[in-house]
Image (cartoon, rainbow, N blue to C red; front, side):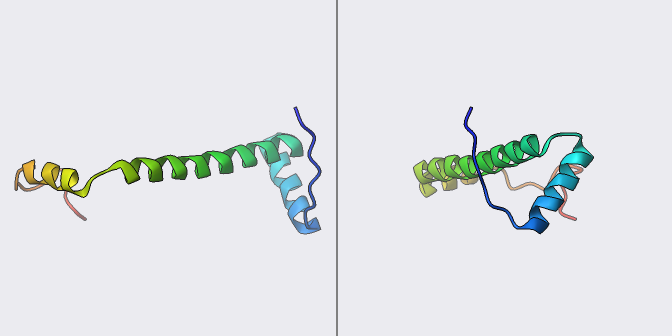
Length: 79
């Protein structure tokens, strides 16, 4: 495990302490969790962009052309 020193505005640090206490975790655990969540978010976007880059519009349109022209099923209506 690696130790990391970060500089935070006093107001951010105070709020993190409050939120960590409310969640029943340490400030360290709170920040580690927040960093992991942000990392997962960025990695998900990277993955989706990479997958989208492999797609072909013609393939997408071909799939759409195979869908029947029918009313939506009950519960799928636009509200």
